[in-house]
Image (cartoon, rainbow, N blue to C red; front, top):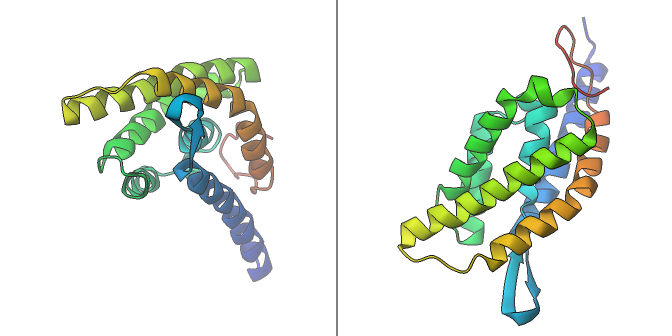
Length: 177
């Protein structure tokens, strides 16, 4: 039987992880201007959902992923439901490969993000074009994918450190110790 202080400790640890996710959500809304008037959106939420889909998918239930996608769409001007759909597909596909991915070295996880993240950004571009029946240049998509691949190790390290403060899962397998 756990005491109130133990429950409070667990609550604070989980809130710290969600606070980290919230900061990444806010950073996701910010666009960076590059030379030649190209706007680059760094997909921090893609990185976040990719990481947590591997190491603690119960931390990001589909309802949370969907809600985050809808909020991101509303705040960033994307068609409502576009990011929610992409995030849910990402979460499902990555979580279904969780058993394989948890035992892999970081380079495999990073390579997996290269494929999944680039695919998600391309799917976002494709679906946005289908909705408008007009496709924009692929250059911002390639730049966003390139930058997100470069900074994924840093974001992964931040998420790993926040993962370290989570309590152990009793009676279940845990991917990261």
